[in-house]
Structures are given as C-alpha cells and as structure tokens.
Length: 479
Image (cartoon, rainbow, N blue to C red; front, side):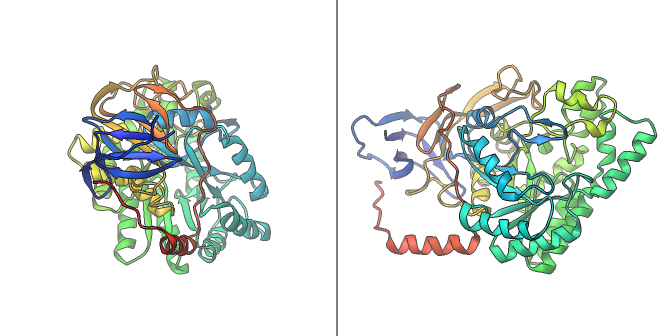
C-alpha cells in the first residue's frame, strides 16, 4: 500500500520546504504539491509537523551477552522503543567471544535480529586475531555488507585489543575499504585503577568514574588516531565523553586526518553527580563506560557537535535491570556496564539542542541521521528525504510535549536515565520501509518488519552509485 504524508514541512540536513511525500514499495517515489496518488493510498496528515529522515542510531547493543548476563532488550523490544522515538535504523554490534569465529558470531546475531521492527545492520568487533579473522573480515565486507569493525581498547582479560591487534585489523580495514571504530579507554590503566580503588575499600558505584578518568579515554583515542594516521586509515571514535578527546579529534582533523567522532545523548545532558547518590540502585543504573563526566565536558561535546568536530549522536543502548546490576553489589567492577536511551535520543536532542538554540532543525537531522548515513555509506538510500531514497521517515511534532518516564517507555529495562525530563518535540508517526510502524503513541509495527541493510565497502559504494545513475531514467518531481 502506498502512503502519502500530506501538508508537512520537509526538513533535511540542507533544506527546509513545504511538500507532500509519497511512498510506495518501500521507497520515496514523489515529493511536491498536488501529487497524483493511487486509489487506496494511506494518508498521514502532517499539518504543522515536520517530515524528516528517520533517525539512525549507529551504536546499540540489543540482546548483548556481557559481563555474565544478557541485556534485557532483545531486538523486538529494543527496536519497538527505537521506532517510538523516531529512529528507523540501528547499527548494532556483533561481539565474538575470544577465539570464536567471526562468521559464527555474525550469523548468531543475524538470527537474533530477525524479529526487529526497525531496520538493522552490524558493526563486527575484533576481539582476537589470527589468519581466520583476517579471512572472515574479507567475507563480511564482500558478501555480507559489513563495512566497519569495532575495537575495544578497554575490558582487560576479556575483549580488549592490544596494539598489535589494532595495527593488524586497521591495516586489513584499509585493504577492504572498511571503517575501523574504537572504544577508546586504556584498559591497562582502568584495570590498575580499579584494583587500587578496591584495595582502598571503595566498592560501590561511586568508584566507577574514578577508575575511568578522562585521561584514560583521551590517551586511548590519541593512540588509536596515531595508529590510523600512520597506516593511512580513517577512524571513528565511539561515545566520546571527554573534552580532551574532542581536542584530540579536532587536532587530527586540522592536520587533514579522516577522524569521525560520536557522542551519546546521555553524555550531553547528564553529569557525574549521579554516582554520588545514596541510593545504590540509582547510582548503579548509571554505570556505563565511559562514565558520565563533570559538567564542563558536556559543554565541550555540544561545541564539538556545533563545530562539526563530532558528527553523530547515538545511545549505546545496552539495558540491564536492577537485578542484573546487583551482580556488582560488593564490587563495582562487576556491575554490568550499560544504560538505555534509544527511544529518548531524538526528543532529548531536540529539546536540549534545537529548543535551546544550540542547533537548527537541519543540524539536528544531520547529527541524528544523515551524518551516520554518510559515514557508514548508506546515503542517500537512508538519511535523506529524496526521490528514490528508502521510505524511512519520521513525522515530527515540534509542539508536542511529554515528561519522559520509566512508566511509559517501551524498553523492558526498569530504569530511565532521562526520567522526569520534560521535552517538547516528539515523533507523531514513524515509517520503516514505507510501513507505518508508530502513530500518535501506539506501536503498529510487528516483529520482522525491519530489514537487514548492507553497507558496501567505500570504493564499491561510489562505483555502484555511478552505475545506477548512468542507467537511471530521469525522474520528474511534482511541484
């Protein structure tokens, strides 16, 4: 069934204009006024609303086995939360156990994700190295549309990459036309500081940020950037939380290096005071890595987004309930690391970004959708409102308000880090592949509505676009 979004204002990363948008067979087929529509077309009234590319969250962890437990949101509940928040695509992470074949882990995650309501793709983590990893990276890029590989510089004695692995994997990424991404924290330093704190009797959540000060992030970021620069590879730094890391990225960019930075909605609005709560469960609910920082770091992150030093916003949605967090009741290093937010990200960023005057609606589209689409090679299929693009769209009501609450969220987790925050600016309707999956507070989508999307290697992508454009018939857009 075709769908017409009527009477709205289209907002892209570059343009704002009044137009109707017609979707059919999963694609945007016309944009303009007085569009002729087939009989039986579904009409969505977007009067006084904005029509934007659906959000792309480039950093989620649904159903993740981690630290002795499994994240509470599976791909169905997690992506139900996503579409309720206006996000139509996630890029999740395949994280093989050390010595587990990459292809085995990849197919396991693909099986789990078949019940997704939103569209999905995967970064694949490099957690060990031998010739089979080198080979599997090639198969993932060439046959399965994976164009990014994750490297944890933290989590010693688990999934931490040594410098030797970083060099080998970054080099392989360069050969394949893939993007190396890094979780930048010096795992050796973190482990050393954790042991010091435990020896001093500091066992609660308040010790978590003390074990991961900003310097352990900036040191790792600088090291990863230097390795990438030496090899001639691009690099993407996930969940940047510290001003020193923003400085490191800016310095490298000013020297002409291709460095991309991501920050989380949570790091933009919350600070490290959450760990000082006398309520152990409250403090533990905020344990994630990197931790929430002192307020000054928030200003640096916002300036980084405004200046283009940081490019994308994500959530690192990795939800653990209080019972799971209690695994670390007597030892903070055993508290499962992770918070949620895939449902709240776009509304929080609209409230704290657009409504505060920090950014324009067009810049909001860039940091919530288009930049991720460009960096991970899926633009203009995604991250765009244009003829031929995927019909992954959000109809946004800039005047609607609500108070975020754990009581009304769609995530299964029993805590909300944005609880009691009032936001103005909410999704009214969300379309995934042209199908209406969320409307005015109700989830309409079903498990399996989401589709896996390929992200071609960088050289392959541009050659494919050239071939497609050369063969395409001219498209007339109604105006």
